[in-house]
Length: 188
Length: 188
Image (cartoon, rainbow over all chains, first blue to last red; front, side, top):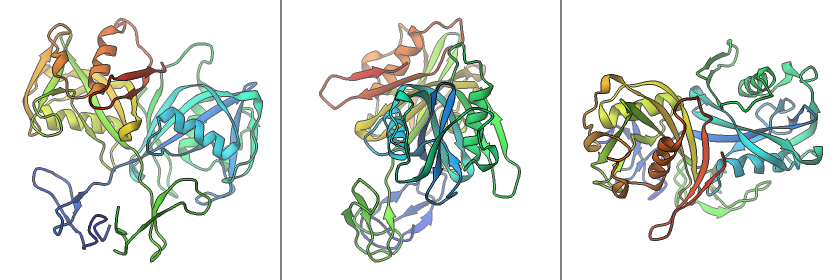
């Protein structure tokens, strides 16, 4: 941030009184501009034990496979956002969503909230942000062509868990940096 | 948002190509400014079956009681943020945190992520944003002096749930508007 979005004056980086972090501060209109993590909502949708994946048509990671997910919008709930993303990216209707996992990505200041549910009627087709969509068994998943470490982690946890009983939501931190090994800290 | 935070020019409100929502767009430097929900992280900390509450020293809701909670900061995990808030507001050390509930507040575009854990050594004292802190049994909770509906909902769910077994995290939407009845939709 270089300029105040309220008044257009230049901002400075300083620690406001009573705070302990650098913020973008406008000394012209006295606005403090806070920047906070973004919430990404998405879902694992299943049909006959297969999982819906989308091949990305947009950057970053164009051509790689992902779970339907995207930035949560204002004035929606987390569950509504996850269902919306499934609809936008795969023309899919999500049913019976439950919270599956919460993944913190501190390096890029994002939090992924993944839901688990059924893909209504087993129907999906490519939305604007997808080149194609598909339903994959565990063995069919293109593990080396997944778009993001958090997608890999979500799918691993899905296939490894006991499907016969209701499970607690996962909580994990995903630490990744391009070219380096991915480190996942699983809290529960 | 009136001005572009990147170049300082005036922004317009328009739907970008390929999008379906109004965004603040800078036609001078072609930046689209997305505004997304804020994540609030907090915790229910217990000591001998009592819950830690803080009386707010700041607006909004100065003088009302709340659970330690605040906006998640960049470059931290959700759990780290919850523990940080307990430390800042109540000089408290949070132990054994687990995810307790996720509450969407669509009207104000916030998502609360509440953790449950132990208050180390039963020690707490008022931090800068608190007038005082206290440990409360269910019967002692100042139910009519709680700061926010999401705090009331979290405490209700905590005291109503079976403490003897590990529970799934709650997922709920809290719809409230000053002067109107609060509506809570509990998904699980």
